[in-house]
Length: 354
Ligand code: NAD
Ligand code: DAU
Image (cartoon, rainbow, N blue to C red; front, side):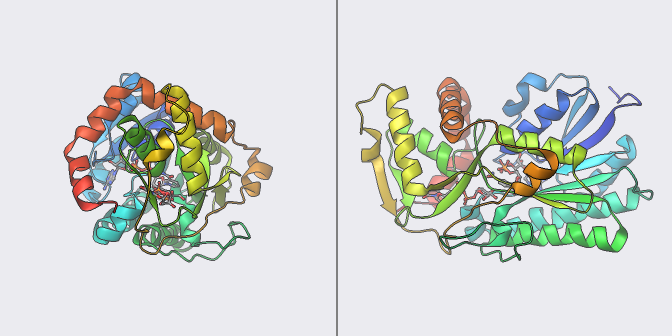
């Protein structure tokens, strides 16, 4: 099926992952778009995340690597893209600590490959857009006070955040040097359906279900700013359509939680959902060795996005977390499939939480 003349043809990378699948669905449901989803299907990519839209006439999936310049070039030739929404990445901080080269390859070289192909194909850049989805971690770590704004200097501290900061710099360099039209957004911690259970919230849900211990790094005093994934996906579509070229937008939930408070809150919610006696899940909490170089606090000032594009989170944390827990309890097969795969075996061996 080819795209109709008046639809906007876009390349979404990493669309089989957690956030990417919500973004792909949102664009595919809008018939103004024709979407090509390019994803390598690493351990984090899962086509089950997209079963409900896989047969839509304005959607195509391509299995491949963003570092494969010939493949990306061929996709540009075949589809003459109007825009790229680039999410493909290695995304887990713990993995970046034990495997930094993989992060440099996908996050830096992969992004650079996409930029190079876009630059070479978009001779007339007008009406084109390269949108890089980035993270608040590029700004480093906050003490108790203050918020990250778009003007906060970059100060990445983990191999993951360094690779994302590097790719942000390359995107801006292509804008400055070759006039490639771009936009970047830097978002806080997402949670919601289809989140791979190596990350804190789905890991807790999975372990509570299985009555396994709940590893809390250090004293659980680190703070994160949580945003429901659908609200991030909505912000991404809005920025793609209405954001100003050459700008950066911070996206966050206005929703800071100390890890231990979040863990206890989730334990109590799970007890209610599972009809457990109150306090049952909290007994599983285990304080373990801290993450190396663990950033203390992230908190986003998303007022630019609110003021310019009128975006706000649509759900409270309590509502979003309940939707998330319900989704995991209703999608046992999804959870079973991803946790019984080879990767989770590897994960358990290599990331022992003691
Ligand atoms: P994820 O790990 O769930 O998904 C990443 C996807 O990218 C997977 O489908 C994977 O198969 C694909 N991928 C990996 N390497 C690839 C390659 N070389 N070529 C093609 N595809 C490849 O990640 P996520 O949590 O959905 O994050 C998506 C993006 O959003 C990332 O760029 C991440 O840095 C950014 N981000 C994430 C969060 C968060 O809280 N999860 C917050 C802010 C920004
Ligand atoms: O801030 C945005 C970033 O949020 C994204 O760019 C990353 O892709 C995403 O993975 C996330 O990074 P974090 O490192 O903040 O997320 P994670 O879920 O791994 O950890 C959240 C907090 O919980 C962090 O302080 C570490 C802690 N933690 C995590 C795990 C997996 C634990 O205490 N125990 C755990 O087992």
